[in-house]
Every structure is written in structure tokens, then in C-alpha cells.
Image (tube, chains in turn green, red):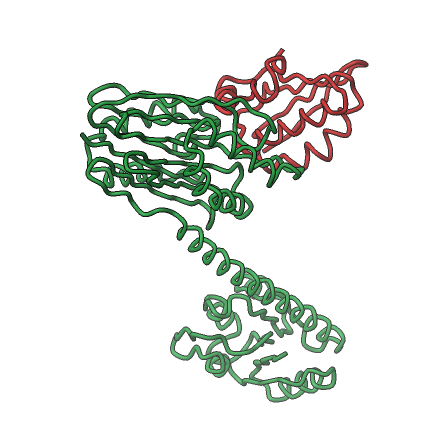
Length: 377
Length: 103
């Protein structure tokens, strides 16, 4: 515990130092002017030190020649490394109080007051500083962990699929560091691809944990089962096995497309997810609408595959509700708004198309995921 | 913001929610509302003053209805605003809780 005492009176410095030493505070430094104090803090000439000098508390006299304590306090509190460093004013004149507190002082000690008053105020200021330091370092640690988690989550996302007959691109926008949105695609065989978008209810870390655990099952699942209605059943069964015992309602919405380029057909399931938008040729968007309930809520569900034939080229847009949902507004109006916008820019190259839509979704508080599939002739 | 009021008669309790139903409302629902209304044979959840329900809120509703029904209570949801009903429909609330939930 290190304390810096600043006072232009040598007698005062000696007195305060003695009281604090006798109370067991050993690391005490003194400065006889505000300028000297700033020097100790590495702030000479307006510099901002990279690392804060190791003080836990400053006791600061107000009336001093040259720079006074109030001005010094303002400078110190405005310097980022010292934002949380408590400053207690030493004063014999209550008239200074308003200004002193305005400058960022947390307390004051009246000169001539009994020793216990000084010691009590010093003790509580130092305790507060320690608590703040611990909380700050925890916060920084947690933030680093989250940033690492975000990187980990991103590594499992597939890179764009770029083939002459099919292109898949995605955009991933997270409001927290990590989220429960997840997309996945794979080539199943020579003429079939599987594309999935899932959105775990809720936000942040817990949703991300759930989406990551589900992600680990997908590869095996879609290659072994393929038929969407059965993939849907299996995913529900797995969700229920993993999280059905929880008292929290854990569920996800998902849309999964099995694109068969030879049969020119899309088979899909949509479990409580906003409709996929299929823009084929010059036609109005076809909605890939709900085929069943969200997954993980009910042990037994009925499921069916939706079927959508196609010919020629087209684009399929999948997205999470964050892109179309505005609190207290109609979600179907949001979907229509998206459809109109996407329809206008549907002839853009696929990567540009998703980038534009990401801009469209900016400013939403929810997580947003966008997947676009370009089918070519 | 989330608040509620419970209107009681001998046979039924009507919970009138006010505000947004989201993750924040969970504790209130669980700790304050459920213990009170589970005393009544018939519980009505009134959504006339609810303007937004997010995915966590949907989860809460399902869990609340499930728990009350497990305790043998009759549960209905009433006066849902159109914009909220759209979210209910998208998430297939009728299929999950049964058509009679809105009776």
C-alpha cells in the first residue's frame, strides 16, 4: 500500500507521515508541491504515462503556491492510468469543498482533526481502491476470455463455397462477443449440398455453448441421414438428450436445406425459423416457411420436408430473426422490408449481396447471421 | 420495463403482464407470479399490455404454461396483440402448447 502525501508545509508532511507510519503504513512518499507530485506520477509536461506509478492513494493539500491542489487533482483524474486513484484533500478551509469534490476528490481531511479521522478515511479509500483494482482485473480477464471464445467460435464456421454451379457466402454479426447463431454447410456428394442456419434462444455465452455443442454433431448427422425431416427429428432428439434435463427452456430455431443440383430440387425443414427467401429468375420471392416447431422444447415432434423445385439460376437468402425483428414492431413487416430490399439487389455477385445485407442489418441490437446461396445455370 | 398485476376471483387468477417479456422477466415470473397463481384452478395470462416478446420470453411462457399444467391447472393466454401474435405464430406456439391455449 503506497501513499503519496502532497503539501507545501514540511511540518504537515512530517506530521501526516508520522501518523500513517505509526498506524502501519510503510510505503509513504512525499511531495512538497503539485508539480513535484505530477513528476512522481510521470505526468510532467502533460505526459500520459504508459503504466501508472504504484500509488493507492494521494493525500493532497489544496492551498499551495504555483499550482494548487484542485488543479492538480483535475489533471490527475483526467489522466487515464489514474482514473481510479483515490484523492483525499487536506484542508483547513471548508470553502474549498465544493470545488474540490468537483475536481474528482473522494474525501477530505480537516487539518487539525484527530488522528483517527485521518486513519479511518485513508483506510476506507485504500479498501475501495483495492476492490476496484480486483474488479477491473477480473473484467479485463473476462473480456480476453470472451475474445478468445469468439475466435474459437469463428474457426468452426465454413469458408465460402465457390463452385461454378453454386456459391455460398455468409455474414456473421454479433452484438455480444459470442452468440448462439451458427451456420454450417457441406458438400454431401457430387450433386448434393447441405446448408443449415441455427439460432439458439437467448444471447451470449450460454447460447454460444449450446450452438457449439450442436455444431459438433452436424457433420455426421447430415451426411448419415440427409433427408431434412429426419435430420430435424434427430437434431430435436439430440437437443433433448443434451439439454432436456435443464429447468431453463433451452431451444433453437433452425432452417436446413438439402440442395440437389441434379434433380434441381431443394428439400428443407424450417423449425420455427423466419422464412428463407428464394429468388428464382425474375419471380417474386418464394418463402421457405415453417415446417415444424423449434427444436429442444418437446420430446416428440412431427416433422416434414418442404420441397421446392427450381430451374435456372437463383438466390436463396437465409437469416436469423435479428435481421427482421424490431422490438414492438411487426416481424412480418420486417420480413417484407427485407424481401423488397434483397429483391432490388438480387443480381449482385453473391459476396457483395451478403455484404449489402449486413449493412442493412446494422444497428440492430440482436445478433445477426446472413447466408446466401447463389445457384447458377 | 416489465410489470404485472394479478386479478383474483375464487376460481381463477388473471395475470396481466405489462411491458416487454424477455430474459429479465424470468425471475419475476418464477419467484413472484408462479407461487401465487398456482393456487388457482384456472390461470389466464393476459398479454393486452405486452408489446414485445423475444426468444427468451417465448421460452419463459412455454415453461410457465408447462409447469402450471403439470400441477393440474387450466391455462389460457388471452388478448395477444397482433405484432406479438406474429412472433407466437412464427415459433409455432399453437403446436407447442396446443390450439386450446388461446381459448
